[in-house]
Amino acid sequence: MPLRYYRLFDLLARRGMKKTDLLQIISSPTLAKLSKGEPVNTEVICKICAFLDCQPEDIMEYVKE
Image 1 (cartoon, helix red, strand yellow):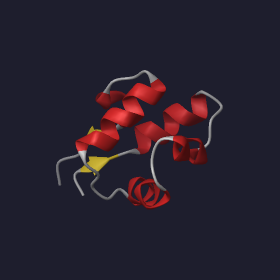
Image 2 (cartoon, one colour):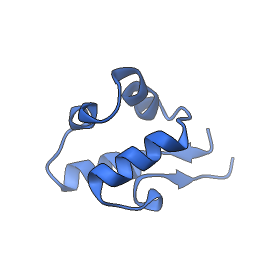
Image 3 (cartoon, one colour):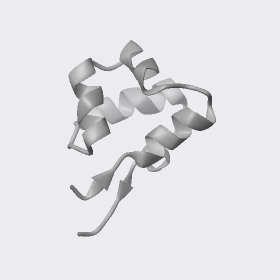
Image 4 (cartoon, one colour):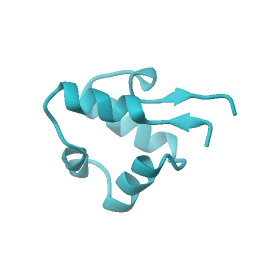
């Protein structure tokens, strides 16, 4: 997958949060998709950005294959 979400998990760690804190705003299957680097829709990205008060580039990166 060309999108990587490691920045999201790094941001959570820097804030003293865990992946499971995202379950307040997204479902468990969606969190699993993020953990596996699978695609999610822009609504999910918007929810995460609002929750963490950040920009999309703070949580994901496009990696050319």
